[in-house]
Length: 161
Ligand code: FEO
Image (cartoon, rainbow, N blue to C red; front, top):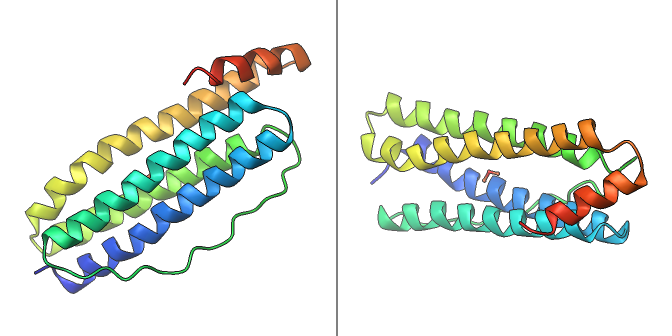
């Protein structure tokens, strides 16, 4: 049985990961509607990864013989001023998710719940990767997208993920 605070934070994190999936699915839709199918495909894959993250948290609660309460998923922002804005939003969102994972980790440490900190180690590593990927994508956009041809080439690169 988990400490109540740790359990509640993990249950909330399922919702945050589902929201991440929703957010990236939505960004993928935005790019598809702009005719940027490489960006769209990249974000759709990202949305699938976020769903996998949510399921990992669900499985962990079940493995601890805890129940899961699925919460409502907030509707993500749909309008963006340009193709760069969702990339900035992605980086900021991943930094926020990192802070949430760190918060669960701290709560588990406070409860001397080393099983949960061990479980969360995977997410700590994953967040390093997620933030780096988001930053790399933003850097590529900033460095290379100076005209429509460059945007097209980056779109082509992202279609290969
Ligand atoms: Fe599940 Fe992108 O963090």
